[in-house]
Length: 308
Image (cartoon, rainbow, N blue to C red):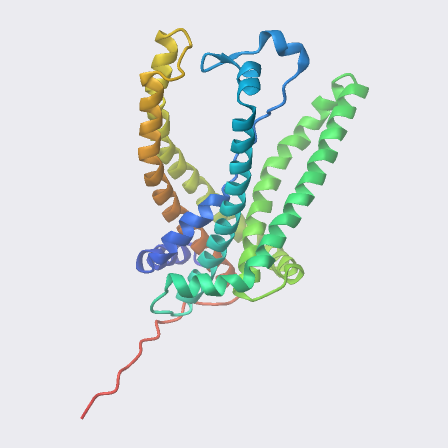
């Protein structure tokens, strides 16, 4: 496989078929994010930290229904983003696949309609991964805690190399997951068939996947760091208000200015991140096609009959 051909072809496809940027923006909704620990322990009740000038417990008690509405709104928003993100990932793979096969023009309506046939398969695979990761995570956590307690901390030291090994394994797993989705959408396979097909291709071409994973992974990391810098700059007014107002930032000019700056930059970030996501999704689609013996096809140009 020619690495340069894949990278350049992916850029040519998303530059010509800019409709893939839209699906890239939608696919970006499925980006992983941290889940903050919202637990609140009884022994810390009297020393709860101030949040925007209020104690957390007092604010929750006074705004119970508001919190309930916010939780409900977040739940609905997550469902909406899950649906849009799934359609985005499918449409991105489908569009890149058709473009590499020589499609001259891709339309949003066409790709959206075609994505519906794969929606439940991709969503089901995502749910299956979530369940597996949850079970493995809980089991691993219990094992680490019990091993640490029983061995008085020595077990944790022994487990450190194994825990460090999980990082590259998780990275390789993410690459394989990308290929499962490409296999299901590109070759119209079921979940089980897609898992088997992607594993077959992945294990037979592990070296190529490691190289492309490093190139795309490190490249996208650098780009996302650059894209995140304006968010850090937007925090400056909030930090200034916190430093000069004794920690009382709720309703301050600095807080308002930070929110305004973030709201202004957020659409720009989503747009640029959508282009990056479109490029990455297209690249992984092309990688799968090249490693399964498929080459780029010339564009099919419709020739109109010449009137006499």
